Each structure stands twice: as C-alpha cells, then as structure tokens.
Image (cartoon, rainbow, N blue to C red; front, side):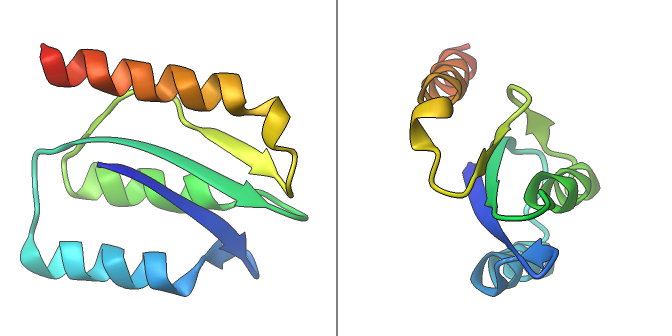
Length: 92
C-alpha cells in the first residue's frame, strides 16, 4: 500500500483518516507500505501515518517524502524513487 495525505489543520485529511480507521477495524496486519504527504504551513501527514503503520505492524519501504504546497518538481525524483523501492520490495 502506498498511502498519501495532505495535512489539514495539523491532521490528516479526513477521508484518509477514515480509511485508516477502516483498516484498523479490519485489523489489516503485516503489510508493506510507503507514505507521502503534502502541506501548506507545517508538515504533519507522515508524523500521523508512521505510528499508524507501526501499530498495524506494517513494513516500511523507503522514508517517504513531503511536498510543500504545489511544488511538484521538487519531489518528482523522490516519488519515482519511492515507487521503484516499492516495486523492488514487491518482487522480493
């Protein structure tokens, strides 16, 4: 699973928070995941996603990345690398 979320008022965007709660209810354990987030003022998405993944005993692939506002060119390389790392891990 590669999961991404914008930071919204210092928290995860509510649809992503809802998805995480549904995953928690279903007790989806032992998965492979990577994460990324976006923000305008202060990054918080990865800070919220990582503890959830640890709670669910998911294996992290890569370190993830955060995108400030719409500065997509600055993270295209990181996004590509994260996808490549996930592909390699899935092939293992």
